[in-house]
Length: 235
Image 1 (cartoon, rainbow, N blue to C red):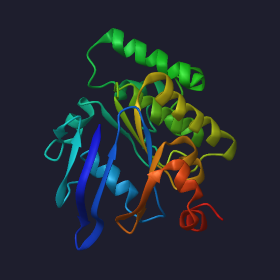
Image 2 (cartoon, one colour; image 1 turned 90 degrees about the horizontal axis):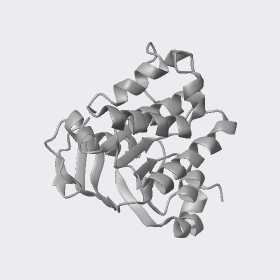
Image 3 (cartoon, rainbow, N blue to C red; image 1 turned 45 degrees about the horizontal axis):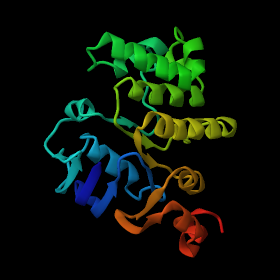
Image 4 (spheres, rainbow, N blue to C red; image 1 turned 180 degrees about the horizontal axis):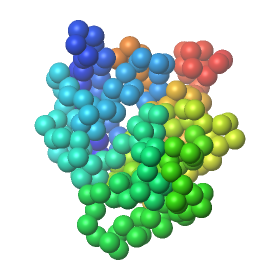
């Protein structure tokens, strides 16, 4: 469904991605794991059109995305939940969700997606008129994911969904990620510093270090890999 080939991305003279290649099959949850500064967020921002690669190709459903602006990529069904959630803090929950559906013109489809969001995250329905900035970290993450779902995604990219969330809510967020994939057929690319959690919910993983992919394989194999256990799993 998604193919990234020999992707090079720089910030001025600093190389952030140095020729990474990976793919995500339709219906899968695939994870990119690595430490801070490894290039995980850069990879997602490049795929979604927020950054331009120096060279390489990003292909989604057989179409080259390299020259498309971000809003056109969203229109293709590839939605990005950014690191730090980036909700509109001065808008209500309802208005944030409406912004996610900005490109949708089918009222019935928008209503179905809204019902889907409320079924996933009932708390958002309870806080519909509350401004986004007054929500807890976990509720803001729910809102960020819900806003992306309102865009009718075929493919969802999640950047650090556990970041800044109370431990009691992290398991809830990850249960919902699995539900989105399993029950609604949305393919997911997950960037997550919590390697243990990421490898528990994904079927395949790639390990990024300083802009290069240094390890890949089925998630269960990576969980058992001595190098990865020592570096990322505390064992």
